[in-house]
Length: 354
Image (tube, rainbow, N blue to C red; front, side, top):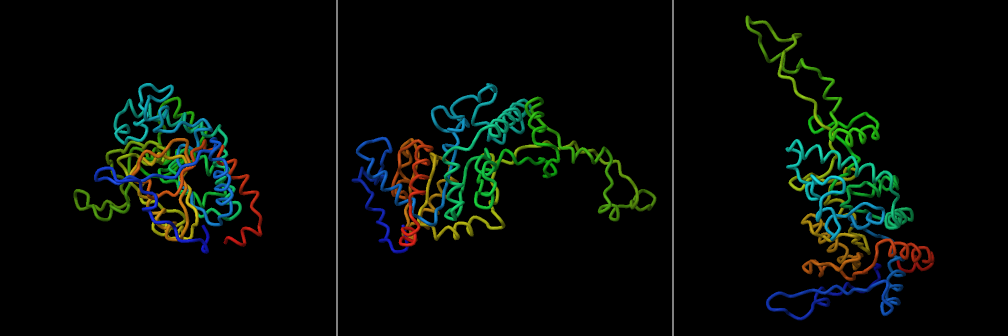
């Protein structure tokens, strides 16, 4: 995992026997609670605790112990109606068509309000705290998160310049018409979401029913040859926009950047990483899979390793060739052990491996 380490083993080292025309890949896996794996588990924790440049890709699995549901597990939001919102199915939370259906929109607003309130009341998990500890000690290059709960940065504001929220943040609100954020207290907005299911943009509402457009007046001529300059035009009034959480819906896309750097630049910065952690994600979306493949290639080119940590075995075997190891574990149990191993690494040892 250092510049002095041996070259990363070829992908073929992890291939199983051919099965027909399709070649399968197997990720070496160790379980934290299996006696036969305990020594290997401790050795991996110690080795990872010594790495000086780390990149993290995280998802909903790191927030479930905080009481925030994930999406694709058996009990996840995508497999049932939202608790308390039986009219809205879990998958519809990120379906842009919901915003075009009045009744669904009201349920969506209330559900988002409830999720905003719940995430404010919860505490960060051990996994969130471990990521913050990596940053505290100058080892975290970037954390790419698919989570929209904002828990990583709200609990650790110092991470704002290191965490890239790929799918947005439910606590970032903007008007769907003018694009401006509101001035109201966030708690007031939450209560309006819960009560009414929607919140109107007051900045749009301040424009009134009649509009004066000085930029256009010089181009227009009134009947009789009079200039439109200095006149008020009775144009069709635009209704105020609605305040909505700034999250990515499944039909949408956006250009992702952090501190003025776009994805290609961020990935290039992460090329010096010796360790890539993939935490609590089923990797079921194309965007997540593409990002992980790109980062894994860069880390492997730097003779680093890629470690997948989750309670469930990775189902998509097409991605298995990009991983060197899976740790089958509850995320918080693993994170607490990782913090302990991190604390036990001596400065002298770090100087040797860097």
